[in-house]
Image 1 (tube, rainbow, N blue to C red):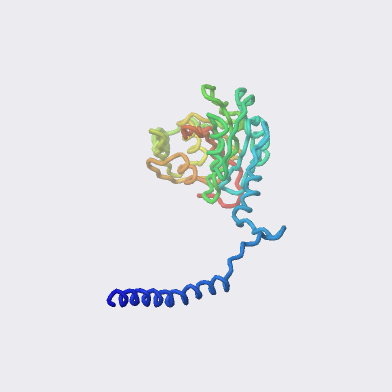
Image 2 (cartoon, rainbow, N blue to C red):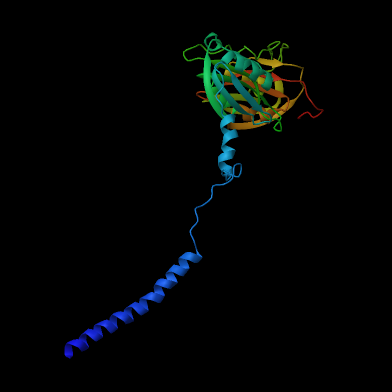
Length: 297
């Protein structure tokens, strides 16, 4: 009897488990039928997803960077007081580049025999003119004009492209004068008093030490002061007109540029700079025709 009761309990428990399991299975089957999984359809022809904009934009950029053919170059000179250079060259002739550069700058650009046969491959943009020519030749030089008028910018008047171990260009290669002034100072008449002569010598004193000038002049002709300065640096002094300007000046440890800008707006100083070492040497001192009616007294 006890054995029959136990079997009945087991059978009843099994039926209850099946009754509880059946609804869950039916719900799962119903859910699977309601949400069938369908394979993802392929996009129709011509409706492919567009590529990202940045990848499409890269294509024209790559074409813009197409390598130049051998022997070709592109040169651009930005106008203005601070001129910059864009140059891309693939083994191009320096002589051909210089011909275009000279035309753009409107100044002579001279080359040594070695550089006339040279070829270069460079690629730079927005480089100042002085730095750009260093990329074109190992030893470049530049001639500048400095005006005594403080409102006038220093102007480049010539460029030279030379190779290493070559003698520098002639100092008169571009900057040339029509004549050289020879001044005779003092009173040449007989009977001139020594006291008057001594007073005149004291009234004008020009000294130079390590490219620094000490200039003292009291009621002296401008031409006499300029002649003394040119003599100290051993350069020609040229007068374009017979000036009657009288100057009073007292300068200590001044550069030659400062002296020129102090004395008169009619002065022009020409000097050359080695663009590799930045050493500068005066070439010529000129008293030009006045551009206005203003004369310093």
